[in-house]
Length: 268
Image (cartoon, rainbow, N blue to C red; front, top):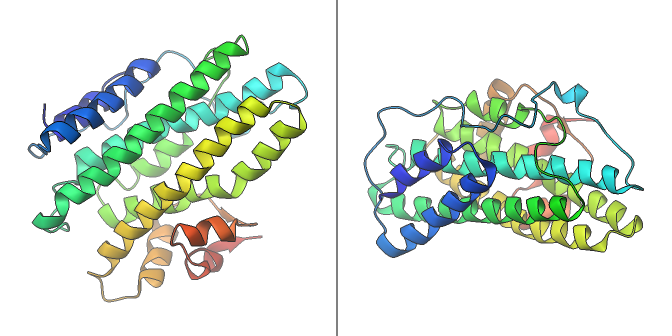
């Protein structure tokens, strides 16, 4: 099956483990065939989702102390929910933008390869966390979650540069800021296995932000403004949340995201 059709299949799969498995199958098929496919006539506004977790306002998502297995489970559940959304964000990036006219014909397979790799990583992360939740006597869906990640990306469905600015360079970059503290807290609570999992995710997310930065700069080069000023314009227009400090400057720099991108947008 061509890549774009496989990406739509991922978006249309509700069961979380099946969604992750199909994302991984998509990667294997892409590596074997290198078939992109045709532009889709329609794409879902909302990816297929399971009945649980219940989606609530971000303010209503419970926060628990990490001293108990339930508290650690709530944290891991929140991260698993992020990773499930990230599968769909990468699949949507593939399906929606691989054949976008802003990409040169010679660069489309490279774009497809990059985001297929990201989607595969996110699927592996989700499955790893789902297994860890089960080891703690929990399941994905046991805690409420919110739909903020998809809602933030949905507003850029018709704007390719804005999607690249918001999804990897705002939403995923925020993960680089907060994950080291999560790792430290889990280690402090004696849950070294969960901490090691988040370390794997953190290390690989630097590469995902780097993928976003590389393609954003590619798209920004087609504009008259500098990449930084174009980024500021897109974020101010399309992102309704806040860019919060403190920032993990080291990780962001490794990912190719200089301070001149995010500091002018920050809210202390």
